[in-house]
Amino acid sequence: MAAPINETHDASLRSWVDSANEPGTDFPIQNLPYGVFHHEDEDEDEARVGVAIGNMVLDLSVLADAGLFEDIDTDDDEDIEEDVTAPMLNMLMCSEPARWSALRRRISELLSEGNDELSGNAAVMENALVPMSDAVMLMPSEVGDYTDFYASIHHATNVGTMFRPDNPLLPNYKWIPVGYHGRSSTLDVSGAPVRRPMGQTRADDDTPPVYGPCKLLDYEMELGAFIGRGNERGEALSIDEAEDHLFGVCLVNDWSARDMQKWEYVPLGPFLAKSFLTTLSPWVVTMEALAPFRVPSMERAAGDPAPLDYLSSNEDRQFGGIDLQVEVFIQSEKMREQGMEPMQLSTANFRDMYWTLAQMLTHHGSNGCAMEPGDLFASGTISGPEKNNRGCMLELTWRGSEPVELPTGESRKFLADGDEVIMHGYCEREGYARIGLGVCTGVVSPAVSAMVSS
Image (tube, rainbow, N blue to C red; front, side):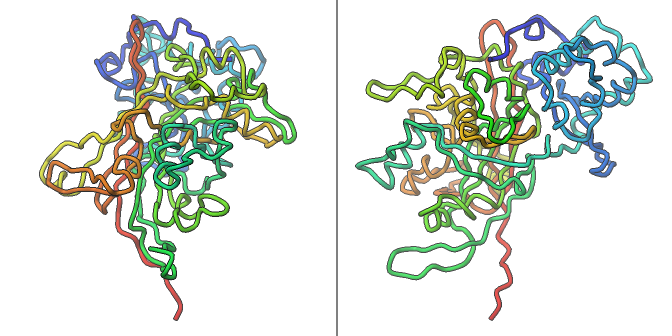
C-alpha cells in the first residue's frame, strides 16, 4: 500500500535550520532523506546514518546518544536506536513501514521551528549538524543484489526502432517488466571516478573483434529503488504488499558502453558493457516523502494487453506512478575551463513509465526470488514521448546521426573524456513543498589499458 499523506507533508512546516526554508532547496523539512556519511577528516569506518536538511546533515547517532529517540511510539518493543546507529541503512530498511513512519515523525518534530529539544541543546547541537560540504557521502546500504529493468516504453520503442524498425518491441515487452541482473560490486555514489571501460567491440560483420577502449560511452537517466523488508526464498510477493517492501528511491546513472553492448548482448543480454560502474545519488528519499506526488500509473494505449492479475491492483492503477521530474546536464572539460554553466540535455517524468515500481518488484519476486533489505533495483532509462525527453545519448543523438552541439562549438555523438554528466530529480505539486533527490554526477576519465600477454 502506498504511504498516506500526513502532518510531515504539511507545506506550512518550517525548520529552525534556515537553509531548509530556502526556495528551491532539495531538502526542506518535508523531505528528510537518509544517507550514510563520515566527516571529511575521518576514516570510512566512522560511517553513520544521517538525514539531509537544507545544506546540513543531521547525525542520527548523536541524537540517539542524547536520548532523543527514546520515546518514539512504535508497534513493537524494539528500540529504534539500533537502527539509526548502524553504519549502513540496512538495519533501518528491514523494519516495518510503521516504524519508518514513527521515526520520520520524530525527526520532523525535532527539526520543526518552535521545537527546542535539539536546537536549544548546545552540547548536542555542536555534533548533531554537519555542513554538507564537510561530509563524505558513502553507499547508503550494503547492496547484496542489483537488478536493472527496462520499464520505459518510449525508451524501448526508440532503441528498438534503431535496430528493428519494423518490429521495435519484442513480443514480451507489454506483458512482463523486462530486466537483467546487474553487478552490485560496481555501484558507487555520486562523484565516484568514471573510468572509460576496456572491452571487445566489432565494427562490422566482415572484421574480427578487437580489444580496446570503449568508443561509444553513454549515460542512462534512471530511478533506483531500495528494498526494505525482504522475503524468504520461495515466497512470492503480491502486488498489494509490494509497496510495503520499498524503502525509498535515488537517482541512478547506468553508464553504458554501447559498442561493447552491441557485440556482446546476444544471446544473454548486457554484461561487461554495464558492469564497470553504476552511479547513485547518495540520499534515499523515502516512499513516505513521495506520498503527495503519487499519481495513476501510465494509461496503456488502445490494444495493449492489460497486466496479468498478479501485476494488477486498483491501488497500483490509482497511485502506482510518481510525478517525478528528472533532468540531465552535460559540462565538457572545455566548458569548465571557459567558466560555462552545464547545458541541459533532456528532461523527462517518471509518471510516463510503462511499468510501476510495485510491478517491477512483484514480478522480480514472483518466482520465489529472495530479496534482502538494502538490495537495489533500477527502472531503466526514463524517457518520454518527445525528443527532449530522451534519457540517454543513444536516443538523443539517434545512434550518433544527430550530434548534440555544445556552446563551445564542440559536438557530441557520445561522451568524451572530461565530460561531466549531472542528473537532478525533483517533485512539485501545488499545495505541497517541492522536494528533490539531490544530484548524481560523474566525470569521464580516459581508459587504462589492461596488461595483455604476448
